[in-house]
Image (cartoon, helix red, strand yellow):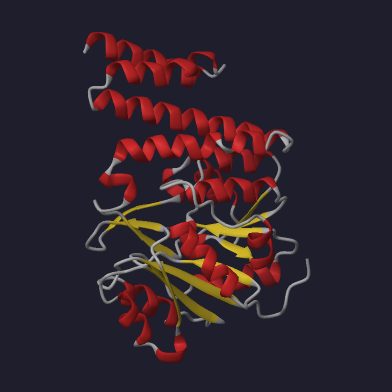
Length: 314
């Protein structure tokens, strides 16, 4: 696909009761060395001063207000309203580093035929202290770092299956053509968590070449109020459901994509079983682990046996 010399980015920020952190997120976008074409904040039915914070930026920020519908619906509304060719996303409690958009613009200009881009980021705690780097902590990310040239790499072929199995990118490093996003129907609205992974896997299934920026360009804040940490059991259950929903959708996909999805489901099932066991739900943990016995994977088999043994001995 041919690209303009200077790709235009829309940065979409969903926000629900985010008045305490939204300003840092927006300011980080305004501080980019490569200016965004537009910044769109979607106030998802907030009851605090989120909308007032967004309005304080005047014409630099487009504010869309909607009834509380969830993060997927908010991101999708922002994508529909955008006019730029490329979409970027940022949650209201995270932030971009100054070179975030510049790094992605350079790769779009200089590397041909990229279907979408992803990249590295830093995990930080609630106070903003650095915890770890995403790509260094994931096998697929480590492989990309080893292959990187001038801070970049391209994923294609079998490597996309490895990425699906345990991806290192996240929503705030995703850069996707708006036309592709809309053609895929955006983020699914039926899941409380894992909606981003569901979309990312569908995106990989229709992609051949994916650009990877191999340097952290954003910070992802870990805190106890997130959906995955405030109710970990429900989060694990939702994750497994979101992944299993993709099986019929992707049954005609390339072998690498189907393999990656099977591996992701295996990881999610094991995580759910471990969560159930930690919470004392021994019978449910065994039920969750039993399908792993027939997965044909040594790691899955060992994990299932460990869960069953733990449930019997508890």
